[in-house]
Amino acid sequence: MKFKTPALAIAILIAISACASVPSHNEQAKALLDQGVALYQKHDYQNAIPYFEQAWQAGHMKAPRYLGLMYLNGEGVAKNMQTAFAYFTQAAAAGDITGQYWLGYCYENGLGTARDMSQALRWYRKSAERGDHVSQPAIDALTRLGVSPY
Image 1 (spheres, rainbow, N blue to C red):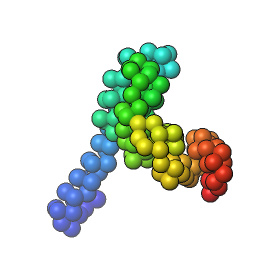
Image 2 (image 1 turned 90 degrees about the vertical axis):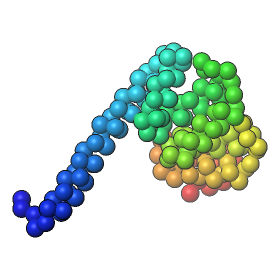
Image 3 (image 1 turned 135 degrees about the vertical axis):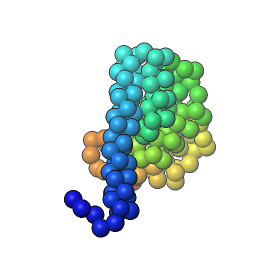
Image 4 (image 1 turned 180 degrees about the vertical axis):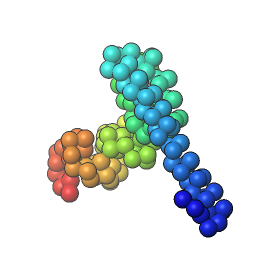
């Protein structure tokens, strides 16, 4: 392939290089999250924590949700609702559907924050948007509250 200007060729090479580096970063974040989840499922919470922290630093949006659950339930850490709320906020803002559900749950129940039903409904609706099995807890919460999820 011949380019009319060297600048165009350089721009294309830079764009291709940038795209090529994204999967390795995502693969690293996914591998870290997967290791954390495997440990979490074995109830090895102490060893799961660093993997979730590293996965979040590497850009995996689900990692703070797991950290939030650990603080919410006192799994490997002392229960701390404010910390759980902060992690769910990070997960929700990053687009994690389940993190959005848990943020709504915190708002509904006043866990780590003041009870705020308008925020609870906002986050439940956001989580329910996809309308599949992942968003089912938010759909169920909205139904329980007498609000249409759609």
